[in-house]
Image 1 (cartoon, each protein chain N blue to C red):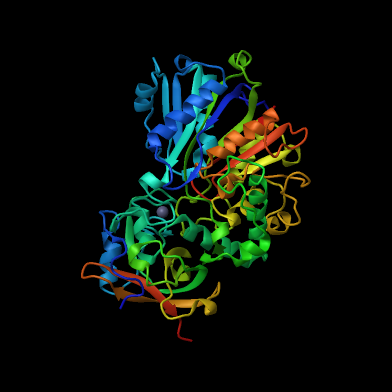
Image 2 (cartoon, each protein chain N blue to C red):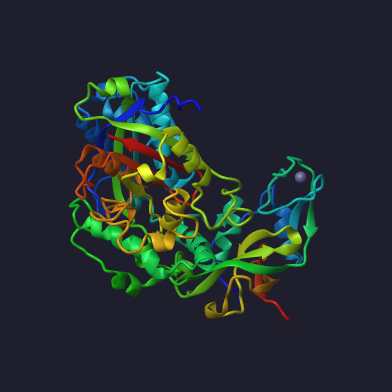
Length: 141
Length: 388
Ligand SMILES: [Zn+2]
């Protein structure tokens, strides 16, 4: 069972970000990297904020990160979450992708044990046939 | 350095607001609420609907100026304007846009307003997206990030981690606003006092935010009439002059999570412009209306506006410093978004005008200059400095 139910809003891939979600289905985490200056960016954008080049690649990254911030949701904000609280939301920083950050969840750790700076690694959860989401678990030391 | 050309050249000459009620309790449509607030502001100014030739709002207000002009009988609309994005961050910005319209001679009397009926159109405390999300939402909602409370909980956690900000300090903001609402019969929380212990005992919504860290969800509307300083002399009310006003956003603050700064209300650049334009410093501010979406963001907004150093906002709000009548910087003297009503912060604009007229229910003695900071943490944000 995925960390959060499949009935909450799920991504509708667009022309700007479909390769990100396709990679998730292959259990790969890819982050956009500018081919002109090497700057990573996330969420996906068609142009580099550093040099304004439209030339980029989807770089496969390790999926190792650290918790940048975290919160514990106790009030359900969607009907499908009524019986699924509490759950955590985290922001993870990815050191090998230029420290871009992404919003996700840590699936295996009680809220009380989360902390800023905690090492985590990506796990992929197949939520539907179309959508696999990148979530995180405590890093194996 | 040359003086900002618009300093003191425009004024707010009328304010209006509807009855404020908890979401879902009004029988009136949001559109009617908009009409009522606008008409009250025009009446307060001693003007006629026929004098009004501009309407502007923010936060994607559903009540389009062309339809409002039709309903109200405005004979000629010269200026209609929407400030993109930012939710409550557009409150002072809508006034800013109105000021530019009258200062440039593009319109004579412009009403800035915000009408919001969460009963009719959905609560902000619930997911408001469809089942498929794209763009930025695709990187939040599937992970449960669906409401402003959750996003700003993540930012506030970071502030707590970096600077030692505590839940009791967040509570001090909520207590101050509630205290002020006890003097204000318009306030939804009038007659419902709250202690710091009440705050600490309120249920957790999204840790670190408890129920009383979160703004109200309301139905209501508020409006203000803006005109040139020259025309303002002939209006019924004593003009409240706009010394400075500013809007915008810092680097990548629109991309939550990537390179945005978490421990800021996104006012660093905007507030710098504001003080330069107004020609004053934080020490000159007698009273402030600091938008509260969530208590933690008020602390960061106070830091960004230079009332204390970065990271010292938590201790700053303690000990009654932000409370009327004895605090050195009374904030949100009507009760604000936390305790008066949530009109996306436009009720903070009308309260600022009352402070400068000397008619607030928590009137700061001899107050001459008031700050309004609209919408911490969002993009864009906006702020303004008013004087009597
Ligand atoms: Zn580049």
